[in-house]
Every structure is written in C-alpha cells, then in structure tokens.
Image 1 (cartoon, rainbow, N blue to C red):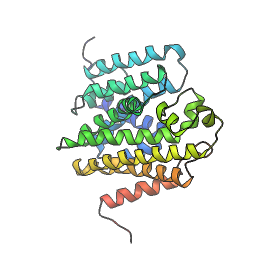
Image 2: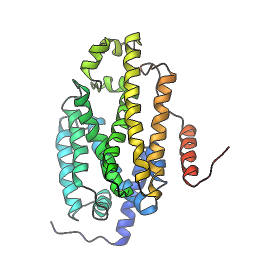
Image 3: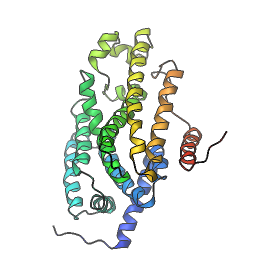
Image 4: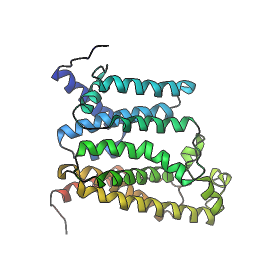
Length: 294
C-alpha cells in the first residue's frame, strides 16, 4: 500500500476526532490533557485514543473469541499508521503524531500486549507478575507520553514507569468488585493467602480484619510508587508538568478516599465527583501559573 499524503485540513479534522473521542471516554484524563500546549495536546489525544481502543476491545466483551484477533489487527494498523498508510481519522492522527515526536512504537505495542494478558486470564500469583501487567498497560502509556511532554534527564523514564504502576494499582484497588464480576482478580494470590483473605470473602463483600490489613498494605504500596513517580514532574518541559500533576492529584485523592472509607472498597464505590475533580484540576493549573490562594 502506498504512503497516503494527507492535507492539512484532513490532519486537522483527524485531531478533532481523537479529541472528541478522548473527551467522551475519560473526564479525568481529558481535563488533564487540556492543560497542555495545543500541539502536544493533540498528540496526546491521538495516543490515548489508541490505548483506549485496545482497552475497549477486551473490556466491552462484544467481540467474544475474536478479541485476540482484533488486538492483533491493532498492531497491524499501528505499523501502517507509522509508515504513513493509516486509513481513518484516528490512524491518520496517530501516524502524524508518531512521525512528529520520538515515541518508541514498542510502547504502544506493549499496551496491546497488556490487554492481551486480560484475555489470557487475569490472575496473578505474585506482585512481580502483577507489576509486569501494570508496566504494559499503564507505564508503557506514560513512556509514550513523556516523549510528547519533553524531558532531558534520563531519570524521567524510571519515574514515568513508577507513576504508571501507581495509577494502575489505584485503579485495581478501586475496582476489585467490578473486576471480580468479569472473572478478573488483579490481586497477588500469594499476598491474599499471606493476609488470610479468600476470594469468597471478597465475592461476598465481607470486609474482614484480614481484608482491611491487606488493603492497608496495598494502599501504602501504591502511595510509595506514586511518591516515586512524582519525581518525574520537575524533569519535564515546564509547559507539560501540569498534566501529570493533575492525574497524580486525582489518584492521590482516590487513595485517601479508600483510607477514609476504612478500606471498604467492596461496598463503597471509590470516586470523586465532577466538582471535586474540577477543583483539583483548577488548583494544580493555577499553581502552575504562580497563582495561590491563602
């Protein structure tokens, strides 16, 4: 297939499509992305739309046994987009982004491989096993994003990995019940056994003392990764720092809410209202511009 030469108008339209797709899919990330300079913002929309597409393939359940084939198709289309042969608005925007910023395409392939792990059976014997999954579905996304954000210090790579792990661990702790309903347990089996927590207790939504101790340990671990990941911020291009700061602030408050609910994520949905999210986002954005309230 020959390279497709897109007009500026076609590229502009493609970026508008991925922006709308991102807005529809995730208010958390969308409002964080809005703080980026226009060119970087559009690139992030394109990358996020790809990752969201991979995630939807395994989470929607509409494709059934063909989900694995659909993930493989994404890899093929990703290669075509990178080669300038992408067909469709998302692929046109993504191809333009990949050729504008030094994003390693392997990071996006890792995201697809992480989604494949969900299809292969989402159970994990140890935390090292779970961490491998977190790196693929979350850290790999962060590694792609920092190439758009811009950085000079190579330590940014390690911190981006830790930040991705922190965000994914927080998602896991928040969504234990929902994941169990679709047959997924993103909790290390050896740690459940160590703390005396059974899957039946979780399924029955029993918040036992053992479960509380288990969750306390998990939240503390997520916070440790979050604190390590926050070292990324000063290494990024100044215009891009607010974006990961906002995402981190939201997730930090989710962990705090789990603690305030006495670690009962089985009977209480852990989330923030739209007003709370906007308040957090506004605070970070204003501080980034030197505006502080007493």
